[in-house]
Image (cartoon, rainbow, N blue to C red; front, side, top):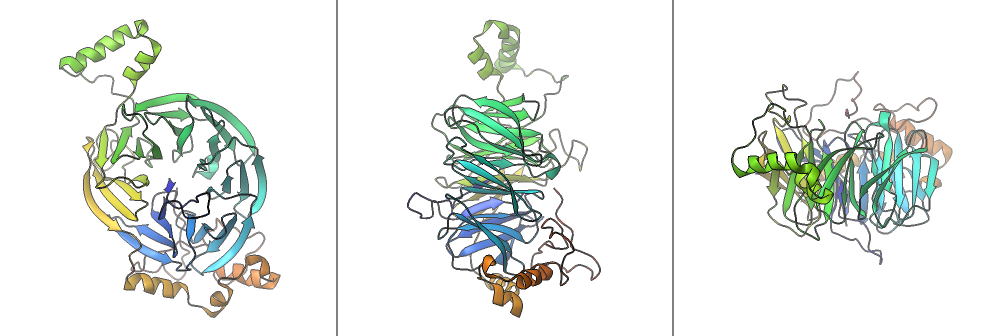
Length: 452
């Protein structure tokens, strides 16, 4: 679910603005030549900038832990170094250097994964200790790696081959290989986990077929055909929170949405030639060549959106989706009040209405990200206040004394040093950040962590 940023072989920024949604699609992060920015996605289809680093460092990778103030960043100037920050206080918690360029960073409340071209490094997010390294992985220049948002089912998926679409599934908690999926004949191009961590969507470089598997059962659940064009590059796959919808973006101007539910058995067959063809395929499936039968059996998108411009890399999210057919008047497929969000490396966020009956999505709003305004400057100024935080900002974590580190962690824990190991998952240590206009919580109430 990320794009833009990244590095070319000469060390330059590879694609304008880096954009990525957080794990539950409640916020958006952006990295640019001036630093990184955090945006809250509001229920009224709006976007609020809640933090801007304005560090002047060209930021090529950013990931935020749900709605907390914990952020992991990589800069163009130091592409092998991961910096973990407490952005609410403007402080660096720690940094780690690796043997090669960092291509992707993935977070959940249990693990932090760093992806290099030929290795993966798994850290305990509780204390940032390196737990395990998977070395000599097949060449992965895309930095293709997916980590479940659900820490109770903490699986990681990554390419198992550079020649075919093989997927390795690794248990990031118990630190052992789980299974291998033979997903496609051509190399992988995109991976995405459902919110529950039990379904994995895959796409290959060929770009025409998208598959959904049950993990760890290795059962193919769904197969969709994005189109018949060749040389289409799928850049992003994303499940809705309810798990009933799957969106896909590519290098074309069309975004496809697929419905992941079995057809109703008592539905009347469609009239006309389409109904006849459906009946003929069902009756004669055993007599058709396997490849032909597979193509005819593949599902098609039930909804789509057309972007105003193409040529930019995009990421997608589906939000505000009802959890079931009976929730909030949702129709079949659970798409009541759904929104299709598409962010591009040009720094634009498009908000579409996703109707329950599918069809063409309607563009509701267009947001230009990273436009400087007085409100954003006030947010940055507020984040920069505090003499101790200001003194620490910009310093290397390994240059701090133990007492300074204790004070830093204590400041992140609302003024009192944590007992035992410092838990980056604890909302009291890393309270959720709010938009500037949001009302503050009651004095005796800790800010809740965002649910996943």
